[in-house]
Image (tube, rainbow, N blue to C red):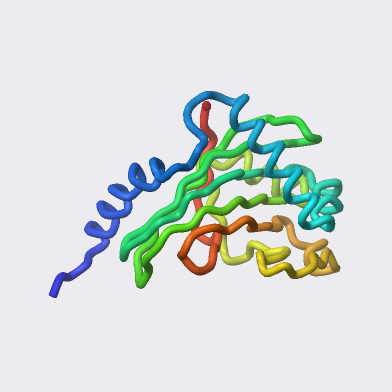
Length: 186
């Protein structure tokens, strides 16, 4: 029986990052223009599929859009994607999103996600961090099950609201908990 240690997990997770990054993410290193075009399309698709998100976007201090995140795992897994932070509909920074995980899992999926920073404080905390990690306190506004967005009192009081949509693949569920965001130069 193989004994997994933290070191084994860390090396395995690090080994998965290049594999996941090359999983047809579609956002090569062509620069900011390519990322911005994909962000525009993702926002347009989200606003047309989930009209309630437009209200969130109008009220948000900033929006982080990850147009395509590829997630794969077989025991040890991970995810990777690139996107842009927009403030007042203008891209101010580019970010990568990475996750490493370990556990009972098999499969792969791709999805888009958008983080709405509803307060200036939440946005500044994100921008000032050297690597911001999404936690369990992240409020999910909707799932990809066709549910209507309910931007009620609960979501209005949440500092960061996540919308995950467009899931394709054969790995069930998508969570952003533990996802680490880092500023990049495209």
